[in-house]
Image 1: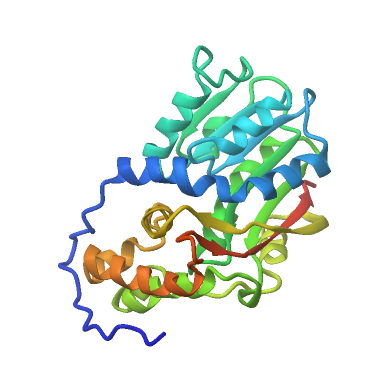
Image 2: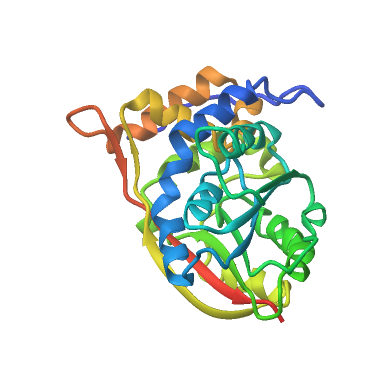
Length: 283
């Protein structure tokens, strides 16, 4: 499909796009977060997460991965460095007297992993389920988190890193390119990039971790209709720069156009993807 021709204009300096972050967080929790459930489940099964696991999750978002670990008996701690609205939803989900009551030792913290230093035994597992290999600089951000988090785990503890698979095996790649094309004036602040083969190994090496296995998991992105697909994808935050460079209506229009090849006869959207995970060990 021929891309819509637009004349992107630079946003005013210091004027971030007007985004309802609470609504976006809710869309993330209700639509988008579940797309990685097969990946999280595969990791937990491989590492036999259970009652003896003390888990630290970096970038825990609205807490679905924590819920899945807690349901297996793990004691969970989640740290969210940049999305307080998502963390608020995690607190609703994981409150001891809520509908999804979790382990009594559950902790949810905003900011740096330093705040997650355990009072008792060190963590036995560290996870970072937010995939890298999607935006410029995301590997650097993960490395910074690991520099602080890895020393909080016991010696030889597994650290799980996650990344997007090759673009040719990720149908969503073509849709994510919309973000970079529209946000071209802001590319220095971040934009979509294709995943590289050794992204995860490079991050592990920089953090002083020892690779100890990897895997690939199919995680298709499926949506009930185009509207839910647009809302889910916008909730990732990957299109915020594009909204700032153009406007919300233009981003919505381009997204709908990019999603058209993935729409089935019944109106649903289906995009097959493959994600990769790396298990590394603390020194």
